[in-house]
Image (tube, rainbow, N blue to C red; front, top):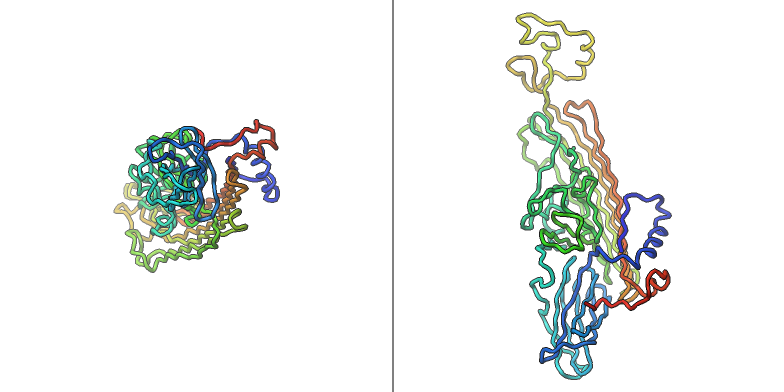
Length: 470
C-alpha cells in the first residue's frame, strides 16, 4: 500500500502513525506499485504446459527469494518486485531443475521468462542464458528507461535528473513563464506554473503529466513537475532509475492524460555501498553575458552530499540514506529604465522649451529611483540603470528508505523524503528584496498482502494469496 503526506503533526508521532496506517490499509490497498513483474509459462519438451511447477525468484543483490507455483495453464507471475537483477529457478517432479540468471527487471516493467523443462532427475541443474524476451509482450504502452548509470554519470546543470526526460522520444521542455525585465533577463518567479521543469510529452500540456516516486504521485501544487524554488529536482544519487511512459499506458497509472514519469528510490543491499561528492561552478570559468558590464557577475554554486546503503540484517532488512545540499550565490546583471536628472527637475522634451512644475508630493519618491548610469535616450528624459545584484539560494534534500522482508510473500518498503529550500533576491533597482521559500515532505509505504495481517485485522477472509493466478 501507499501513503502520502505533505505535513506531519509531530516527528515523534510519525513512526507510530505510519505503522497504524500501514496496518489499517495493507489488507485492501492494491493499486499503484512501483515494482515490476516476472511472469511466463512453463512447458515440457513436447510443448505441453506443466502445472504445479515450483518457481523461485531470487534477488541477486539482496538474496531475497520470492516463491510461486504454476497454475493449470502452466502460467506463473511474481508481481511487485523491486527493480534489480534476478535469477529464476524452476523445478517439478520428473524434470531437471532449470536456472535462468542475470535477468534485469526495470521499474514498472514486466519481464516475460518462459522456460521448457527437460526430462531428468531433479538433482540435475540446467542453466540457460538470455531467456528474457526483449520485446514487451505484456503491454502496448510506449516507454523508455533511464537507468542509474545514466542518471548519475551524465553532466546535469544543477544536478536536476528531470532534464533526462527530454532524451525520450516525444518529450520536450517548455520554457517557464518568468518575470521578464526590459533587458530580457529573467528570474525563477514562475507565473502559476510551479518551480519544476515543464515537460510536454506526446504533445500534451505540462500540467497533464503524472510524476510518481515509489508508486506515489508527487506533482506540485499546480499539478506540474515537482521542484524547489531554484527550479530543479534534487536527489540524483537517491534515484535508482525512472521510466517515461508516453502513450497507451495501462489503467493502473491513471490520473493523467499526459505522460507518466515513474521513478523509484534506491535501496540498500547486502554489501555496504556509499558515495560522497561535491560539484563546484564558478564565474571564473564563465563567458561574458551580453548584458554584463566589463566585469562578469559573480557566480558560485556548491552542490555536495553523501549517500550510504547496506544491511541492517543480512538478507532481511536494508537501509539507504542520502543527503544533498546546495549553496548558491548568483550575480545577475539587471537593467531598468529610470528618470534622468533633468526630468527630476521638470526639464523634459515635451516641455515646449521650458521646465514643467514637479509636484512637491512626488519629489520624495524620486529618491527611490537611481539616476541613469548606462546612457540616456535621445530625448534625455529617461535612461538605463545597470546594477549587478546577488541571488542567494540554499537547499537541503534528505532521503531515507528502509526495506524489510518478513517472508517471500510479505515485504515492507518505507521511504521518507524532506526537501527545504529558499531563494533570496533583490529587484532590478536593488531596492526591494524578495524571498521564495518551499518545504516538501513525502512519505511512502508499500506492503505486499500477508495472511497474518489479514487474520489479525479480520478485514477480509483469510484466503491464500496466490500471485501466480491469472
